[in-house]
Image 1 (tube, chains in turn green, blue):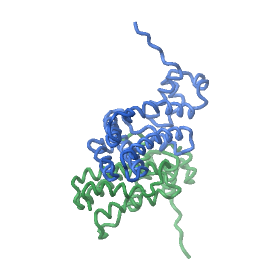
Image 2: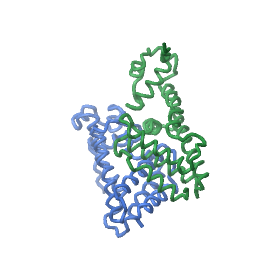
Image 3: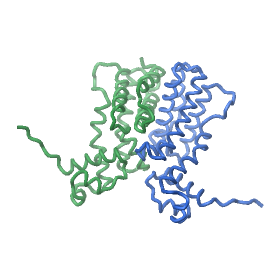
Image 4: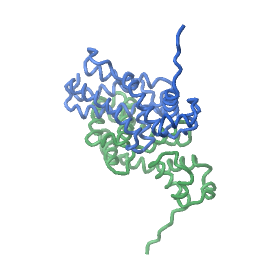
Length: 189
Length: 189
């Protein structure tokens, strides 16, 4: 007999906030969030100070899965070039899923239009980890200008995710050659 | 004596919709739009069927200025490579303005999350003109795969605009070398 642990109200609210804001945007109402989570508004306000607080917590909670879904394992024996390309292979794979709507962190920052909002700041910090990974790998790969390479790869990451999210491009055969051209130009062989 | 033509209610509504949705997002209320335009709700509904209709018209109206602000003049005597790089120089210039929040058409598509929405379709068509420009110049410049080059340049365009819009990057010294690396890889000299 397996024991299934029922998700707590807090977990259900975090899940509802992550899912519904990803599908419908940050302007989703408190009522809809509580209804989807099966939690009363009173209970929600006992667990979170505000909808902004819930949104911020839900973005933070997805951070580990976001990073794990993109970055290669530490010290996997591959070259910096291969490790960087791994990220873009994941982007292409993820973009193929029907429920893909682009990078949730970019969407939140674009929708909130307030970079001082706690949720924007969480999004910014999580994406900064990706920039930092690119910079570190670029440096180890002998890039002429690791900062420039990291910025370029972030442009490709956000641009590709955004264009796939709005269904302007399916990314097939696109992101790997784009990243490769930039790595070639940077001298990362 | 100069004669100043007072903008019509329709023009003031289109201007308010363009400005307020760019600054605050597509969920701006009808009341706020009418107030900013100095037009009654009753008058608004005589001019536009709905807020969606007003939003769609305001995006359409900005299309010519968007294209003119990015693309070089037709037959300006420059090479395809220079003409493509012109677009990215404009992106870097525009991103330097304090009121820059990224590409309004990308933002609308990300915010609406419904690619069948009339406003999303207008945004899609306007961006498709930019893709078409890149494709045509890439072909004339002898690109190995003009479709791929056009898709890559759109990724850089949207990625750079988005990252500048959320203040993750100021684009200085970033977009031109990124586009150049892709043009080099494509064989567009």
